[in-house]
Picture 1 (cartoon, rainbow, N blue to C red):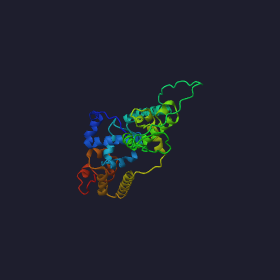
Picture 2 (cartoon, rainbow, N blue to C red):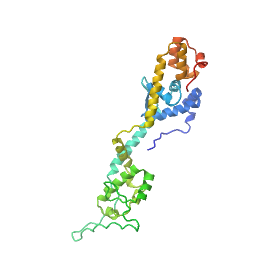
Picture 3 (spheres, rainbow, N blue to C red):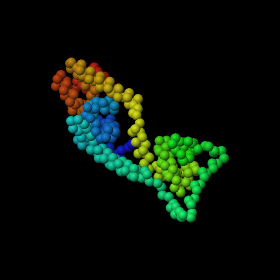
Picture 4 (cartoon, rainbow, N blue to C red):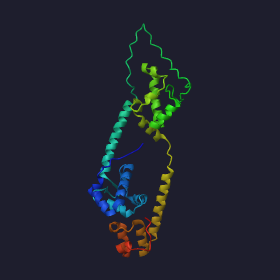
Length: 303
């Protein structure tokens, strides 16, 4: 299922984003929206300890992240994490809508479609026998698909393929289960349509689709976890990058090695360096100036 979040079309004119643009240019705007996406993925909060990883993922420096976080009103933070108030507000709305839809789906899952009222039976008039299944057309004998544990639903292979492409196979199978339960009840209406091709029952506005997404989600939650190879690769790269950074910092023993470390992991942006705690630390320890960082030619930036 695709996910999205609201994005104001005139967000670029927001005062806070204009400040970010003045400091980091279009790189900063792209970084901002990437971090917003990550906040939605992580339920609204990101740990400050992950700043270096976030920087690595977005091909920017940790100083760029710190610059963005220091712009008043753009993000909030405490000693452990940072967040966006607007993201939290919109996540609350999304959660409320999702819970409401789930409640409605559970309420309506067991409901059957409206049926034509059946005429009351009298002692002298036995109920009419069910109609025999409709005879398939010539060339279609035995062409209905067989579904495990499904007794009454009839779909041609071509119909199943078309519906799967339109609705998704897992969703379609859940709808088939729901229709089979209704057909099994043996009401007058169900008996009338038992032997027919049921393709028409799966139109987009059909009651069969109510609650299907929630049922599919529950099934997926029960499935064993299968790691994503691409995510595993990226996680390994991040761990190795973080390890190299730790090793490089542990080997800082003089002014030049400190400059090399700052240039590689925090860049040469003057505004970012001014607020960087790392630059301040080594500036106090080794007497490094901004000019020495910006004009340094002994080490090539990796970004």
